[in-house]
Length: 531
Image (cartoon, rainbow, N blue to C red; front, top):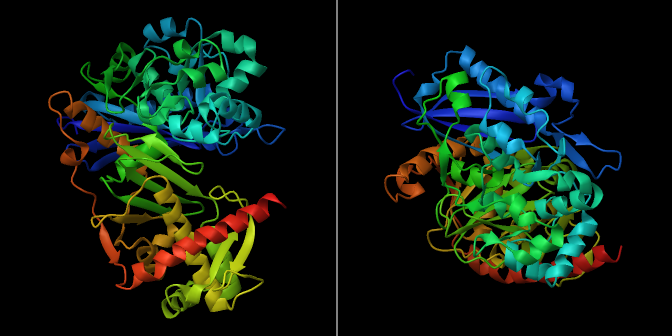
């Protein structure tokens, strides 16, 4: 390892800090993590967070993240890791978390003393000691105020890529300003978790990158600048406190003297802008123009590479982290694997084998029967309950078990296609679907996915995609200093396994069914609103 060159990726996620080192062939050569609850019990977190008495306010201690970095770097040093071999590093942070640097903190960052750990040096640098994070949902009033100030939720989505969400940073800043005005006025700089982590490495305030910045309800995603109306609606002097925004592949500079002297980093080690965890995953999965990544887990998540977005009231549009003129869309569906497991238990005696056999024997299109299965309040659409419609669009109270199984799976994937297309995604002949997560091992489920999207489905096996993506982004950002090379040109496509292709008759069956599904969904949402 002493003579080879390496790239580091860090992931400041909700429950742990992860690090990955890759060599010049982009093979993982080192991996470690610090579990916040287990390794830093003094901060008293559960799942990496503090849930407050109102159950809506959720925060994490800033110094816990700093101390985790101390621990992981000390471990690497003790293991004999050669920091001088690192040519570049980058990282990611859980999206939407915010960090509030107290006046005078820049001077502290500029003059860190290498004989002391970071958490000791920075312990008095934060005007808010516990940072609001993505799990926080206490800012409903601030969301309403922000939407009203710009002309409504759709107009806010047109500007920033999303309507107002409680977890988004602009609304969190607005709440801090209202409820902790003294702390707000003492704040010199507001960082996202990602730019905060980058600041630790460069010994100065790091700018927010376009991609993570587009998860704040503050950035104009087309002009790549802070939107004045949004800033004014949230808090005074906010432009100065946020600082500039930069492309996600920007080289911010080199590591500070602190890391050179304390750990032996090279003085030439570049730091590439840190970004949010979802954009970093897009890089880690090496998505390309037109690809769809579908993660089928507890929640089902779609990542889409989009060139011409149409922001909607559901889903999010972010600036693309590896190609700044393009975009990525994110859709999240709460009722994923737990709903599939519930119907498996009710309709196929808890057996995936029986469940899959039923799927393979029932006809595509389910003879026109449609189902909506929301055990908990869904994000997309905002609805709850189980709703079944027969071929004449009439509500029915139950389906035969085989119809129920196909209605669930078809309904889940039709919703995904409908919402993807509303955000501007267009299915092209070259479209590939990359499936990950627990249900991606079920070929019959993937066949339904392939039929409904009329595209081939490949499986992709990548662990820690966000962290890995940042080691790739570090290499790409560094290469851009010498030539305008694209991310896809630096990295060979990830190894994919083609699992299924769409059946020839699929598009003819599902095109009219998708239209009916959207019509029935409107009825379901109306019913949920009136409950």
